[in-house]
Image 1 (spheres, rainbow, N blue to C red):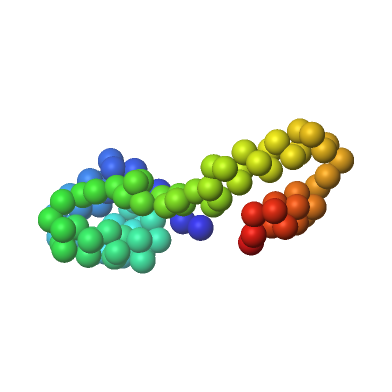
Image 2: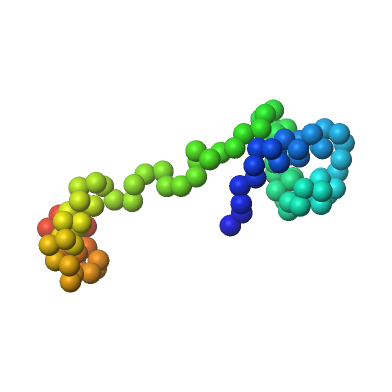
Length: 97
């Protein structure tokens, strides 16, 4: 999995590109993969500004609804010897899959 490129490094990449450095030279100078430099350069050319898409990271919605989560936690508290598969089975029997 790739790492996030900080905004300062992105700005440096764009300033080097505007100074007519090649993508390969920028890649070596900033110690970034060539594909990252190429993609960020194309993104800047397309959008006209630098942006970081941290808001697009992570899940878009919860994996389960709040009621099912509360019910599973309640069952675990009252039946500490039950594991997740049994709790899931009991909830499915009662509420449906």
